[in-house]
Length: 77
Image 1: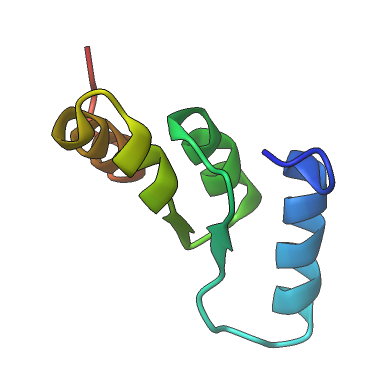
Image 2: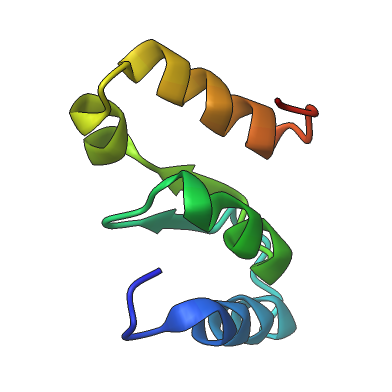
């Protein structure tokens, strides 16, 4: 995650928005990778934008499958 916010910063933003009664989905964007999926889910994010990571992956289809597995809590090898 970007060092500007980090996991705790993202969680704080999500908590603040939810306490304000806003129920719109919150999507994280910007330089995210597969390693960011679990911490962002734990912080309460509803979605992620990972187009750059997918495009730059050696095998974009495999990378996309790994991200989907993480997002859907599917056990992966």
